[in-house]
Structure formats: structure tokens, C-alpha cells
Amino acid sequence: MKIFWLSFLIICLWFLSGWLGSYIFLQDIYSPQNTINLSNSRSNIDSLSPTFDTLQNIEQGITGMAQALWPSVVSIIISRDMVMYRSDPWGFFQEPNTTVRRQVWWGSGFFIREDGLILTNKHVVQDSRSDYTVILADGREFETEVIALDPLNDLAVIRIQGGNESFPVPKIIHQWDDISIWSFAIAIGNALAEFQNSVSLGIVSGKDRSIEAGWTLLTNLIQTDAAINPWNSGWPLLNLNGEVIWINTAIAGRTNGIWFAIALTTWRVDYILKSIEEHGEIKRPFIGINYIANSPSVAREFWLALDYGAYIIDEPWSIINWSSADKAWLKPWDLITHINNEQIWVIQDLARILQNSLPWDSLTLRVMRWWENIDINLELWVY
Image 1: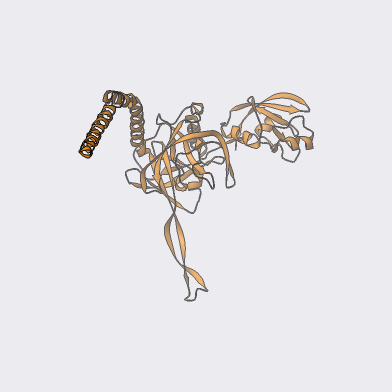
Image 2: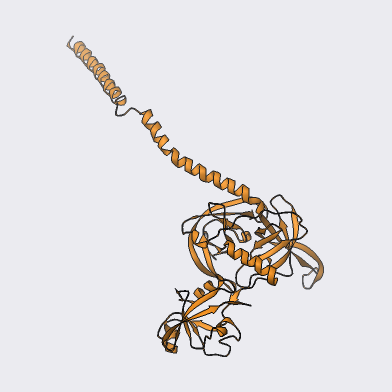
């Protein structure tokens, strides 16, 4: 009998402990602290709506910008006659067999005048042995002729042949200073001349960059990570206002995400067009001096008081006859330290200032001559 009552007591305690444990667990689960507050969750989502609205506005802006500017961007197909060779069965001898026209490269450009003038890169159209065909956004093809190559910048102008219509021209930014570091850059073009609607978004990482492309020193470039490929030379880069601010030109070797573009402004493009109309080519200003970039070692060698600037060496033709320098009475052994109050540090500084100047612009040179600083006014000539 005792065993029966002991067993009964144990069973009751077991049920009672199970009931109490379940009650405590359910009370904890449905306590106010652990209950999901749907109203608070809804308010948190609503608080994110301004961010989503902003992103949607940017998305809509880029979409509208690409649709509006797409007709002004063209693909450029470079074709050349390639000689095909025939060899004997053993492969010892080869002789020309036939000539085949083939596509050898691609590029891009955009209209800068309604009558069919297109701005692109010089390295895209500088081969006189090649022919250049333009493909518009609607698929039409036109043969082109090369009008002018820029002697200092990687720029060129080509013209559509046989086009008797008006072509859309994008807006170009007016002032270079309006672009700041870390602003957005949007690249629009046709990748490989076949992948249309190619748009990439990036950031401006730097201004006034300089690189060497082959034998050419390119200055006053911007650096961006907006995706650009070797075949996308000539793509326009835009700001968020839909204005063209640069034209793609080069990619840093052995890197990914470092691309460069040439700065464009309305006055720069207007000068190119005016120079072509008046001279049939793009003329650039020059000073007319033979100089070396000053440095601490150069200053020690020539006994100069400063270690920066452009030093005019004492050599034949150090001052070109009838040049701007000759007219301004610059002399051998002169050290140009400033141009328009901007200090000259390296050779790229002088080249950059000249590339950003126009013919007949007036420059004020600070020159150290025989340990004395003098100011000289100089008017740029063209060549």
C-alpha cells in the first residue's frame, strides 16, 4: 500500500511540474517585452523611405539621361586591307595571295556639331591607312573622313559623309572648376561596337593627373573608376546634370578600376571648331623656348637660387625666332618660376598650362634673371 501511494504522489508531482513549466514558458513568450511590435516595425520601414526615394530618383535620372544622350553617341569601326599569304605544303615559303578588308579596332565618339562633326580620340583615327565607319544609335552606318588631329591632346574630329540631316549634340559643361573630387561620373557608349546601351557609374578620384601614353604626355586628366575598356575610347563622361565633362582616353596599365579622361569645356570645344574653320586644322599655342625642368640637382649645376621652375638653357635655338618668347624678350639663363601667379614645379606643369590656354591668350611670367625677379607679359602664338 505504501508503494502505491508513493507512486501516486510521484505521478502527481510530475504532472504539476510539467503544468507549471508550460505556464511559465508561455508567459515569457507572450510577455510585452518579447512580443513583436508591428507598429514599431512599420515605422522603421517608413523611416527608410526617403533613402529609397533618393536612390530611385538617381536611378530614374540616370535612365532618363542615357535615353536622352544615346542618339548623340556613335560607334566607330576601324577597317583596313589585310594581306593574306599563301604558303607551300611544308610551310617554308609564303607569298601574298589576296587582300581582305577586315575590322581591326573599335572606338566611340559623340557629335559636337549638328552637321555631323564628331569628337573622338586621336589614337582611334590617326592611322591614315584605315577607313572609319560610324554606326549611329539607330543602327545606320556612315562613312567618315578625318578632319583634324590635335597636336598636343589625344583628340580628333571626324565628319560624317553624305549626311544631310541634323544630328543631336549633347550639352558640354561650361566651367572645369564646377567638377569636384568624389563627384559622380557616368560613362555612356557602345562597348566593342556591338554592346549598345552600355552605361557605367563611377567616382571622380582625382583631377590634374598626368600619364604617358606611348610617346605622348597627357596632362590635365581626371581619374575615375567608371568602367571603361580599351575599345571604349571616345566615350563621353557625364555629370549628374547630363553635361559632358570628359572624353575617355586611357587606362592605367596593369590595373583594374583606374581610368583617365580628358577634360572638356564649351570654350575648349568652341576653340577646336573655330580653329578648324579658320585654319583647317587644330592649332595649339606655344611659347617657343628650349628649357629643362629645374630641380635641386639642376639648381646646383647651374648655380640657381631656386630649385623649381623652367630654366631656359644657353643653347642654339633656345629661343625660337619670331616666337612668343622672342617677342617678349626672354633670354637664355632665364628661370621662369610662375605663370599667372601659378608656381612651376615640373615640366608637366608648364605643359598643362599651355594645353589649357588658347592662342592669343596673354600670360604673365615671373622670371628670375641674374638673381632678380621680373614680370614679363607674353602673348601666345600658334604653330
